Length: 550
Image (cartoon, rainbow, N blue to C red):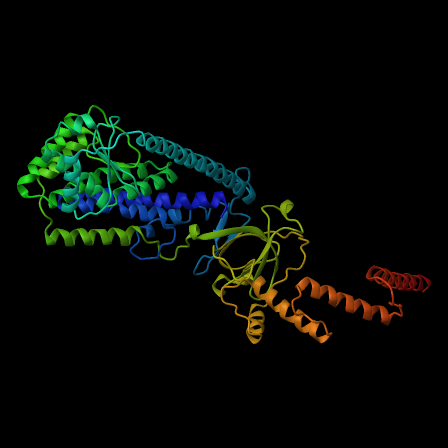
């Protein structure tokens, strides 16, 4: 898949995820506090799935049935000008409009198919370059910042306070965790945070943490351990990577911002579920205490902290104050809503062709047979050369092979799957870009008789499972070579294929030399070969003179 196709795939997924984001925001606004904090957090995972899964099943419930052409076939019509869809049940062909009067009076404004194709192709290529450049810059920046941050952590002193160590151990028992956690004093931060995907580290601002009471320290530790237990750091890594890929979509940025906020509230709810009801108020006071010592928000790469900003703290305090364990009725409602959004947003429109799961092949039809077409690759007639890449595409019955003619410029969409037989694919959709005849001088294309090859390999005991056609043919050639060598009396034991072929050539040359009356005794192979060539050359000259005389 080239850069342009990859960008189109990312763009398609990003646009569809925008619809899912809109659905989630709408549902959250309607239900608000009627759904538990865990639901508000985990529902954002549907956005991540929509962004990273290009292949989705079709469903009549899909919201994309409302606009499948705009979101799922972003480029299916932008290569065609003045075209109409061929009237068959699947609309598998788009052929040029042959009505000469259709655009009368508008000739000066009309663009040719090639002009439209080149324009949009150039735009996508440029946008693809801009996209990959932006993605690489963001990822590189993140990598540098994260590396520098962890490099600085190595210079920080560890917290080996006995009381802190004992308190952390008790909190781990309370949360039923066995992870080995290193406590580090870091005065560069102003709020307790936990970082580290493989080796978790609890970062403690020395000045602030020593001002907290033992009970407040316990709440801080429980909060940070909850982030670790729920794998929030790993999830943050995923969201940052996906966000970097979709940097051009502000809705994705907003969705992950809301996801991080909802994650903090969900973390509070999880901690409260492990505390007594009488401790809920004290837990809320601890957050306020941390906030009062927070001079400004600090950006710690891939870390989870207690406080972000005052607006967020206000929301969290309100949720802590009104916290109640989720009832069975609310749990069922939450589950139904999640499944409903998934069915509507994570499925494709009925009858749609997922162009993001297909590869496009643009070229000219150089030949056709009873089952398919031969297409030589090239975006213009000047690009088509005798050594151009070419492929054979089988055309299913519902695509109406008879409507395709030699000389047409086509775009073939086919599944991006490794074929057992090279350069042979099954077309999913064929779009005719130019409907005129051209003279293409292309050598005949050799196509393998797959059934015959597989049957022959089976008869000779060759295992074909998981092998390409070249590997199967190579084994067949090897078997036939061994049989041929034995027939002429060559001992093949311990010899390489090249040695056996050299001996066969030697034997056949000797036989040919004897047939034309050449004495081979005491002569080298080169001398014999030269004499054979001279005899054939003399015969050719004699035949030429005879023709001239006639």
